[in-house]
Length: 309
Ligand SMILES: Nc1ncnc2c1ncn2[C@@H]1O[C@H](COP(=O)(O)OP(=O)(O)O)[C@@H](O)[C@H]1O
Ligand SMILES: [Mg+2]
Image 1 (cartoon, rainbow, N blue to C red):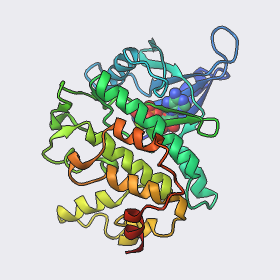
Image 2 (image 1 turned 90 degrees about the horizontal axis):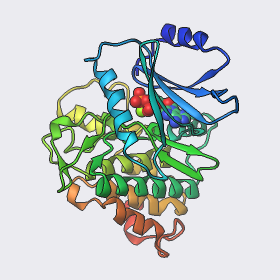
Image 3 (image 1 turned 90 degrees about the vertical axis):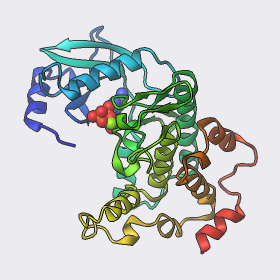
């Protein structure tokens, strides 16, 4: 992620006392409106482009597309659209503000020496994200296209979970597929078929959600998939930086987890199945998470054998 800090500080001065930076995106900065125009303190977030790009600029088009998508979707687990305007020739997207991204939260936990996230929080993130994905996939025929912890917003002990960042979303055909050439995503979270020859389906989002489970369980970026791709391409770009245990073929990293996390290991495995057809739909995932049989404390035979092997 490239951030032009000069531009950021300039825009901060321009709006001094009114806005505070809460996040950095690709070519855009996210601000909290400290005082909203009505004078009351409100929870409005602004996503503002750092530069005044040409209309053909890919980031400019991405922000317009994001605004257009957010305008026509509405769900309790998706950030609410509040408008789109131009400020000093720069496009600005207005939306509801949440406390932080799951990615920031995970980084903070890691910084505090924690090894994993609370299991009930993991469960809430998965339930919220599955509900949002089911809505996107089955009602709006939309692939989010960039599911990762930094694109999931949380608030109040993970009681509120909302997806954000729809700049890389892709329209799905009625059969739930889309052209794989349209996929951009983020490599470490991307499904193997999405960065290959396809087919691109709703299951690409499910794979990425599986990677978020990995992030929540290990508090690490899911490098192992990227590592494998690099290896397959005979590139050793990553080999010096990451040992295999750091990339983990997943399970070695997960082996130190307490029993209460075993069900999530199983969910991780299910969502990241190599064959996209073997992965659950968002609704199937939700049904498992909400079923009375699902309990992070239940020790599943399949999972135990994976962990102990
Ligand atoms: N509505 C919001 N409320 C609080 N934080 C937000 C909000 N939108 C974005 N952020 C923060 O800003 C970061 C970047 O925003 P995002 O929309 O993902 O930009 P990009 O498209 O460049 O990735 C997010 O990871 C998150 O930390
Ligand atoms: Mg983002």
